[in-house]
Amino acid sequence: MTEVAEAFAHPALFYRDDDTYLAGTVPFVLDGLRAGEPVAVAVPGARLAALRSALGPDAGAVRLIDMEQAGRNPGRIIPRVLRAFADAHPGERVRIIGEPIWPGRSTAEYPACAQHEALINHAFTGRPATILCPYDTSRLDGRALADAHATHPVIVEDGRTRVSGGYAPDRVVAGYNQPLPRPPGAAVFSFDADLLPDARHFATGRAAALGLPPGRHEDFSLAVAELTTNSVVHGGGSGAVRVWAEDGQVVCEVEDRGHIGDPLAGRRVPPPGKIGGRGLLLVHYVTDLVRTHTGPQGTTTRFYLGR
Image (cartoon, rainbow, N blue to C red; front, side, top):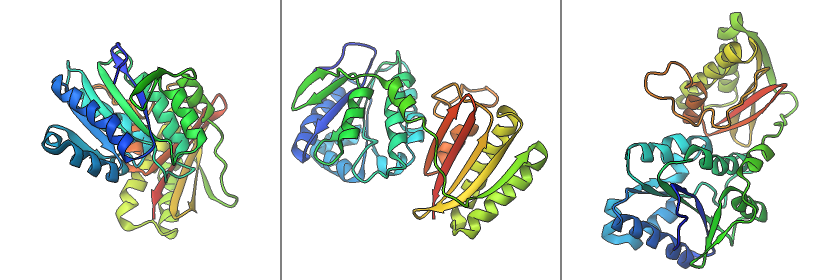
């Protein structure tokens, strides 16, 4: 397979069945191992098992990651999977297979997945890395494949590489930055700096009443605390928190008058020693999904936790 000759390469692999999947991924891994490059594979569990079997003894030299677990929330894939692996090998070119979009992703998850794929291009600009992203053309819909052309500069299919004529990652980030409709009747609490403890108490109480398992209460409380504090510090000094149940999950959102200008906010690990800048990152780490709408009039950040 021909790769783009630049510091960072981000091809999409279009496959239609098990054979074309393995034909596109196994040589990619083996070429990396032969070149002495650290290699990671982060794909859904069934694909991971197939790759492990096809690689045989060579699988032992590869970092294998179940993307259905590590990438359940698309917003944590860049910091906790891709950059974590690359940063563990400073000065080396790394090679990664990352499959964040698979059949079965929910309609709520998909926009965050597409934005993730677009933001990889910014997160790795100038970094010596190749990240191959597989797409199942037989089961993903036309929107996902069109977005793949927009988020990847080259497409690999049936052993051939072609330039993507639709490459426009920033358009995808902006296109999915849409207002988040909320269900009518969601419980709401308005807060300012003096009412931060009350806002957290309100939200955690509602989550418990809606059936959030005790094992997720700490994650929920941390996410609420980080978002409401951000509203007071960066979002105009006040905000509103809402909580409701949706499709078997507890959903919480915090709305304020702030504007997030950095599209990688929450997906970039601050350098060691820097104070602050970790609040939204922590929210991504402890929740199952984060959706954000931001603009000059304000920001809404919504997170989901399974019941």
